[in-house]
Amino acid sequence: MSDPDFLSIPNPELTVRSGERAPWNTPDTRRWGYHNLHRIARHGLHLRSRNVLVLDKAIDMRIEAMPAVAQLTTSTFFSAMTVVKGNTVLFERYAPDFGTNRPHAMMSISKTFMHLIYGELVANDQVDLNATVDTYLPEIGSGYAKASVRDVLDMNVRNDYTEDYEDPHTSALQQELSMGWRVPGPGEDEVSTREFLCTIKSDSLENPHATIEYKSANTEVLGWIAERVTGRSLRDFLVEITEAAGLENALHVSTDRDGFPNLNGGCSLTARDLARYGLLFTRRGVGIDGQRVGNEAFLMTTIESASKHRPAPRDWQNYGAQLIVVDRCVGHGGFAGQFLMANLDTGVSVAFFSVVETLSGSDEDYISAISRMAYEVTLLDFD
Image 1 (cartoon, one colour):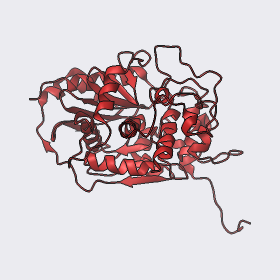
Image 2 (tube, one colour; image 1 turned 180 degrees about the vertical axis):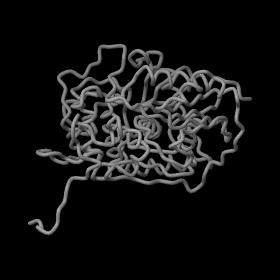
Image 3 (cartoon, one colour; image 1 turned 45 degrees about the horizontal axis):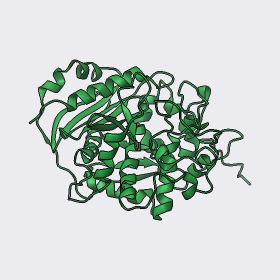
């Protein structure tokens, strides 16, 4: 029985009001929300490296002179951009309300962690990518049960999970309840990520199109499988990746109520640390102290075999194993304006943070422009 002398209300930063969006994810406050998601989320992890990759600074004025860079880094959406090669910062810029040691939500760039995790699983023969999901998760619903693990990795599964941010009732926004990004409303139950995933259904899993079926829930299914087949928590993998990248500040990861990390989009890093993380891909998984994460062969196979592409205007980007692939570059975008691009040939890593402040937060032309700019920066000859 509640004490009449005490009054409690649902957390106002996490309570959905008009428009079916949490207050931190509305146009007027989304920028603040993305700069503070690491403290807004209800549950989370905080991981820092024992050893840090030291970065020198030698600014290359050619980057600043690129028209796309000048345009995108002066936009009102812009938060931060860092370009690193080896251990040298070649370009760095921040918005007036942001800074070097400020973490920023990176949203779906978080999915790239799953590529490294599955590289290790494949190398250790701990998962069969051709097996169906219910081989490992017999309790999963029809939305994934008979899909191959490979198709889940490649965003090649059809089900009733939707990710249309123009629709306030889209599954991706409803999933925020299980992720700890909003609190239950009247008549809603608080569910875990695993419980949420089991509610996804499908009559036909086959994707007949040349474009991917982008669903953030896929990443959480993959994480659940990884924990099931290894007996390890995703946190253990993230600790190893953090150490290998040599992050200076913390990797913040939101989790569900059970501590299951939201690797579909729950990570936050500083711009420099995101660039450091991108360097892991340019080094093909070799860490700063010689340790290895991921799997070079798996990474190279992904680059060579990724065949399905993003819908227009990003149809110049292929997708495979939780990575965007463009020639010899890999990376990922994040909802509402983030991008990571790492060029395996040139060794350049580009981290870009911004926040689209439209109602939906979605602007595919803008994201395409960011990714094109990042790709072109990685092609410059810095030797």
